Length: 388
Ligand SMILES: CC(C)(COP(=O)(O)OP(=O)(O)OC[C@H]1O[C@@H](n2cnc3c(N)ncnc32)[C@H](O)[C@@H]1OP(=O)(O)O)[C@@H](O)C(=O)NCCC(=O)NCCS
Image (cartoon, rainbow, N blue to C red; front, top):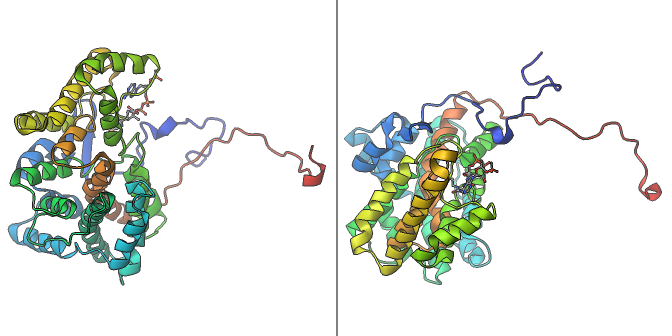
């Protein structure tokens, strides 16, 4: 019997929970001990010592670069920032009518029209496309943000780092070193996370040997949902609904009473404190002194949510703060609007998606699970005119 063909005992893993589908050397998520590693490096060490550009190299190339390798990679990243004019037209046309994630998805899916080697499927070409995508995700998202506030497109500045250029293209003025560093940290923390829904979706599409642009477009589509990438926007929305810190406990009590989910908590893999949330929490604490009253209030609400949820559902149910709890206040502190949180997540995650796709294509196997059919069989067909 071929594995999985026994219809009498399908052994369904709802939501594919606990199912391994491939091997990977890209990242390890240890949900029991609350650890995360990219290519063997702990997230704490990368957050402290690295940059987003270097982490991109690490993820897609599989090792930390030498200085020479880094300079070449970084130069290529910087040179790929320009957005083709027709894509700017798509952004102009769609922004304001559709969610920014839909605009980003459409813009990304149009990119092969402006890449003459879009369908050349060598590893070398896919690496080149990956670097181009990492670069363009930043520019396109910044252009969407610009358009959302009815401001003119700002051309990329090649002298700036990826994070600094993003903020420059978004705000029209160069960020402070501190702002760029905060964004750089957030990009590192969100860059990769094993076979999460959007990465899996990227791999499903890529496993059919559809091209990289198609696979990445699927990843963007999947990231949108509030159970995944959309959670940081949803978490901030919840904090705004709470309004004042002293309303927090009553709000959470009511929501849990109605069996609603509290955004920014819980995770399919982490059954303990998400290590990324710890780093973002301490960044937020560092930012506290210099931040606006709004950010201070959001932080207080998030901290009260954290305390109450850990007491109520942490140890007993394994529902702990995740990466999205403190992200909103941090993004707010560097002037990023909530509508742009999820696209910004995509700006961070693109190296992870590309790294997985490049790795999976080394031994590609069509991803095609089974579902157990529970409906009737052999029903007699009645012509439409004779149906009651
Ligand atoms: C991320 C998430 C989808 C993973 O959960 P999962 O493994 O699929 O688990 P489920 O959604 O099936 O939840 C299991 C139980 O925990 C509860 N639960 C999970 N997350 C919860 C949350 N954030 N708030 C309250 N209850 C939660 C569910 O209500 C469910 O309870 P039940 O067994 O009494 O029905 C889930 O925790 C969630 O929706 N969190 C909020 C959204 C979020 O922050 N997402 C970002 C993830 S990084």
